[in-house]
Each structure stands twice: as C-alpha cells, then as structure tokens.
Amino acid sequence: MRRFLLGMVAGVVAVPIAIFVCGWFGLLSTTANVAAPAWEIAFAHRALDAAAARRAPRVTNPVAPTEANLLAGVKLFKDGCAGCHGLPDAKISTTVNLYPDAPYFAGYPPTEPDWQLYWFVKYGVRYSAMFAWDKQWGKDSAGRDLTDERIWTVVTLLKHLDSLPPAVDTEWHAKPHR
Image (cartoon, rainbow, N blue to C red; front, side, top):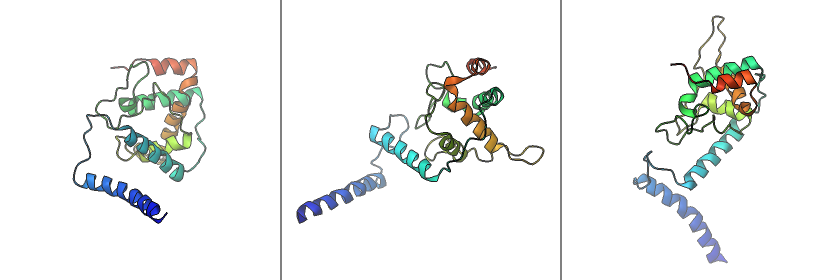
C-alpha cells in the first residue's frame, strides 16, 4: 500500500513539473497558426468558466430587452464587436488570425448568464484578444460614465439573438454601410 501511495504522489507531482520544465525550455508550442490541442482548449474554457463563476458578481441585467435597447445593442455590436465576433449571415466569423478564435456570436449566441457575459466584456479575457472595455466609452456631457450601460446593452442583444423583434432582426441582418 505504501508503494502505491508513493507512486500516486510521484505521478501527481511529476506531471505538473514535467509541463513546467517543458515550458521553461521552450518545448511547448506557442505558435498561433496551428490548432490548439483539445486538452488545452478544454482546460482554458474550464478555467475561464470557473474564474467567472468565482469572481463575477451575480447581478441582474438592468437593460430591458425593448426594441430600442436591442437596436442600440445591434449598433454597438456592429461598431465594436463584429470585427472579432462576426456578423450574421457570414459563413464563418470575420475573425482573422486571433488565437484563440473569438466566439462567433452571430452564428452561435452565447449560453452564459448575463452577469458572466458582462464580466467578460468589462474586464476582458487574459491570453485572448478580448480586451477590457471598462471605461472605454468615457463620460457623457453630464459626467456620467456610459461604459456599464453600453456593456449591458450589448449583453442584452446577445442574450436575445434567437428572439429579436422583426425591426431589430432586419437591422441585425442588414449589410454594413461602407
């Protein structure tokens, strides 16, 4: 039994040490032009979900899914998010050379709760191209910071992509003006 426990402890300690040593000596791939291994993707998603579940406050979305708010969300998404997360009716995301790939929300709406999406947008996601939008929009003429309201507006759109009112759906699928 003692040999078994000693082997078990050695195995549990050896794997992280081996990964650390491989990384330290440059033996792990760091290029962005090849697909990540499945274990890396699974680990990253699990770590991100766990971090959000632990750190993101479970607050209620203050932006109601009215037609006006959803239209505002379409504009904000197309102006600030679509370059990475894609536009509707595209066969693939418009993302080019991002590693890891940005989620294609236009084709696959997010399933995370509102409060998690808000947290991802506000604070960004390390080791991805998702930067923090906190304080990106500045203040209005009255000195009020618009960032939280705009983030919540985009989150409201994302959570209602499968049930948009006709006028909003038309705007959502409209080709960008160039």
